[in-house]
Image 1 (cartoon, one colour):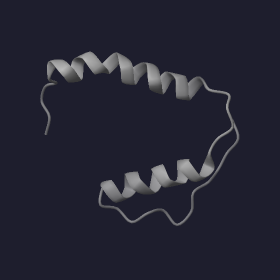
Image 2: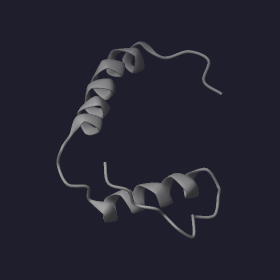
Image 3: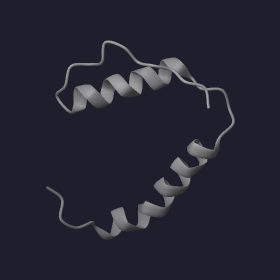
Length: 59
């Protein structure tokens, strides 16, 4: 378990923050294939079976 960040990780926090805020505020169309691949990769990384259904909702 990580208990503290390196100076480099701390420096990069604002970079990743800004990137993900931009994603959240974007009005661009969703790339559903990319989103589904990301969900499946996250489940696989956690050692879980990928979801049988992924529900898509408009914003």
